[in-house]
Length: 272
Image (cartoon, rainbow, N blue to C red):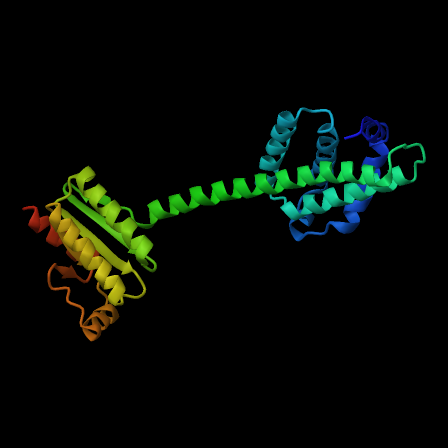
């Protein structure tokens, strides 16, 4: 950017900031921002505009790092990206209006506009990139956590584990179930695995196929599989669809499944 434009912005920093604060109040309306306390709102606005002006004097890498840190904090607070993109557009208008009212510039209006445009656009692009990258990273971590929690293999007794399934089962989740099932059997040295479908709302042909595949995989690694949580409506659906689940034991409740698992491991529950 032309040194004279940089000097102009610095010399009029306070007045430009005040005009921008008035402008942003007028153009940037967002329900999320309106819920932010007034003190934090005003402080963040001033930090934002100070950061934008400071980038004029920073090295490119330092400026990018400052913006990155600012954006990460904003996302945690809950500020929307659109507020700051509109804010940057408003600041560009404020600067161009101020320069236009000052006759001392030797640069042509096109040169001034080009410099300001490149400067503001560069910051907008980084804001968008940082917001997108941070959200993608957060969503990825959340997705991975949900996947891990969606099909856990839980050891309940020695050599007996339970995998409670909740919600719908699609192909991607079936693959995760299979992986967690086989890894968990080895890790916990399970001899009996109870697959509990109490929380699965619908058992159709595809879901039954995935369950059968999981059962066969359990047998291949030397363990016994018991399907529990067979509700009356699920049993009726399985019969109506002609699905063959005769290759492995089924129980109506988890308690009955655990009792069968204890018997298979030469133990039993004794009431005293």
